[in-house]
Amino acid sequence: MATWITICDTCKHDPEDGAGDGARLAELVETAARGTDLRTRRVSCLMGCGHGCNVTIQSAGKLCYTLGRFAPEAGAAEAIVAYAVLHADSDTGQVPYRQWPQGVKGHFVTRHPPLPPA
Image (cartoon, rainbow, N blue to C red):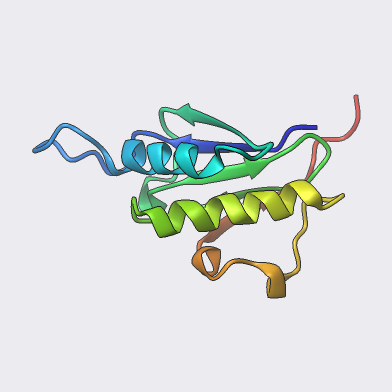
């Protein structure tokens, strides 16, 4: 099963320059994920505006995580992708804390259990 990084591309819109932090982070995550088996997609709002910029890491049958409070920076994007690779390699989606990239520590907002089998 594919592991997806879903990026909110409307987080922290700056009306002065017309571009939002979410869109900038999305571009950086997409670039960082190139050459991996991860899939990325953009959505307009993950309803975590108080925690923007937000992303989710999810895969069928695994724990899903929402992470937030990221700046649209290459280091943040690289940490998100590194964590998503570990999530993809895990049978359950759970990654031991000691393996978390430093750049995602303190950014976890929610964890959701996998949906039950149909």
